[in-house]
Length: 356
Image (cartoon, rainbow, N blue to C red; front, side, top):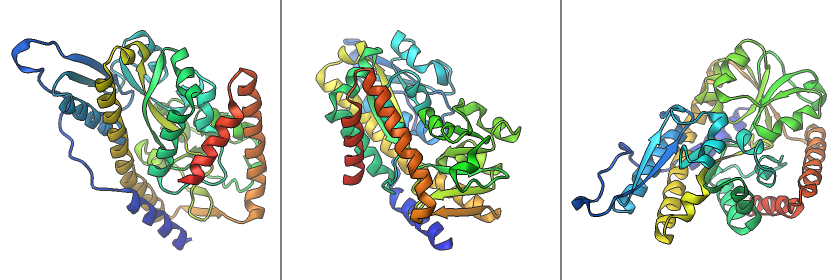
């Protein structure tokens, strides 16, 4: 077990790069007052101190700097513009020009793009590599952006979450049959995976994570290590069921930045490039900051005597993988019936994950 924890720690160290400095998110407009800057309002449903909040501020600085002040980016943290469940509608309506959305929000609005919460048997251990696969899928499968435009937005950028395993309180579900009747929180469409097993699978607002676990509404979460740290869930759980030799998990989920489609189309080609590059840089910084967050959660678990169980053999993984096959097949059938290229998109994602 110690060797496996060491492997996770080494992987985290490899992920964490030299962190870029971050300042405030304001800049003066161009001097002379001849041209009014383009103002982009960016919504963050969560606190500014979380890694993706810092990444959003960095993206804002990048864009204002690279545009020479022609684009001014205003970041609104803590849901002061839009809440977690309101971001898609609010960005579509122009309350905010840009917003960050999680897998649960995305899966409730679009279908083909829920490919990012399909289940995976083997994931790259480096989150930067998983993110690169997501970017390549977005840019090589035109139906991805086309579906987003059908609801009035576009992907502006993204970052993959760390591979997720099961983290539980007072229980140790080692097989799918152990999940029957268990309250578990899972991101977006992933809840359907555990529902197949008879679990009481929920997809909660992140603001409700802690109280739901503390009060026993849920006994487990399928979540990544930075999520355990950021929302303080690590204080409540005591068992960690890890998938794979290095604990790589069975799904990742994607946090994404969406932009109002009309706002995007109203930008010049050069301004589009700057805004895209800015959020890509902010996403990379977020991943770097997530590394120490994951490390804090792992260290807390070790220091407080949590139990780690690694499922690594064919016999241990087979029943979980059977449900993966069933879940993904049902996803393909459902999304294909809506007229989307589900099978080819899923296969392309799996091909890219293997590539990286």
